Structure formats: structure tokens, C-alpha cells
Length: 256
Image (cartoon, rainbow, N blue to C red; front, side, top):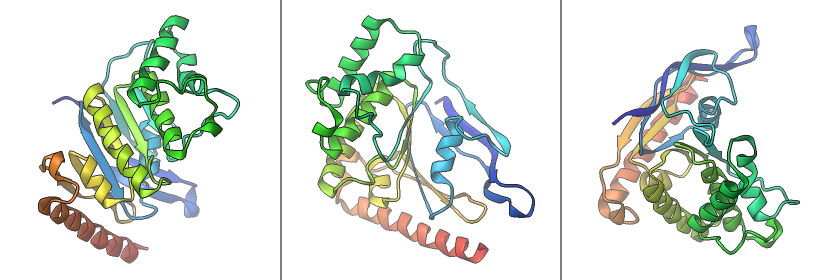
């Protein structure tokens, strides 16, 4: 399938001279159209930074990022979902979802329809006139996902969006996200520190480690999702990725 994200020898550094901190160097990853890729790694390896570079929020030090999706003034090619929903408390839910539409060429009617349809998609169709304080943490994260989907992106970048939620809500939203992904056919790059979450959601798991960071391992998850919660093959794959992370942590500590 076609690659919608491709980095080539990507390097990111902060600072200059002797104080320069190279986050990662010569990083090469790709995400295919419609693929769900999860990214795990050691602390400080640059997982969130990588998403921000792909989203063009941080410039690369070296190398390049290629985004191969159609240009359309009525859409955004990339949308990002953060760990915190970051809803504006002075705007009702429908207005929060419509925030990203304010910079693209859609009519007021199209804007209202996108807000309605994306809230329906995340199961909050009746919440448009509520205020953020009236929602639970899980509901606010659903609004954050709806806000990203409203701009009709080809690519969703997700930075630990369920990291602050309780275990039951997290599991429910994992299943909701998979349902939305199947329905919308978006390409997803999902950062998480939770290995079970990475294996449950991903078609592939990328492991980021060492210093400067690079992809130290890649795991193809060829287990049916209906067998991924507690099946033997699922748990075996989780342990394999965990062992890889332990090795990557030792490698990073040795490079410090």
C-alpha cells in the first residue's frame, strides 16, 4: 500500500554548540494508508517530539518528512490528539469540535454537519450544547477525537490520548477508537507508554530507544483483534515487546 508518512534520515536537536541535545538521529519510519501504527519507547526518546515534527510543529535538524496525501482546502491532511483534551471552557462542546474548521474553507452548513457527524461517531451526538465541565474525563477525550476528525484528516497523530484515564475508561476508549478507525479508514500513528495498549491497537509496534534515539525494533502484530485482550498469543507478544523495551532501556542507560 502507499506510504502516507515517510521520514528519511530524520534528526532533531535542541540547543547549539556544546549544549546541543540530539533527540534522535537518522530516524526512518513509515506509515501506510489505513494502517494503525503504535510507537513505544524509553523515557526521553522523543516519541512526542516525533509526532510534533511530523505535524510540522517542530522543524527537523536534518532529514525530511514526506506526507503523501491529497491537498484540499476543505480538509486538513493531519490532525493531532493530545493526552489532555484541552477544551476551551468558554465554548460549548459543538463549538470546541468546530474549532479546527475555522481555518479551512467550509461553509457554515458544512461546519455544522461535520460537528454533528463527528460527535455522533464518538457517541456524543446529544452533547453539542453542553459545557466541558459537564463531561467526564473520558467524554472530554472523545470530544478531542471528534475535534480532530472534524477536519477530515487522512492522518491522525495521537500522543498518549488515554494516558490520564482510569483503566476501565481506557479500555472502553481503545475499543471505540478501533471502531472509529475501521469506519473512517484513517492512518494512525499512536504514541503510548502502555505495552498492552500498543499491542492491542497496532498493526505494527515500533520501539524507539538508544541515545540519540532510533527504531531499535519493530513488531508486526498478526493476531486477530478479537483475540488480543487476554489470549495466549497476545500475552506472548506483549512479553516480547516488554523484553525489547527492557533491552532498549539498558542500551539507553549505557549511552548516557
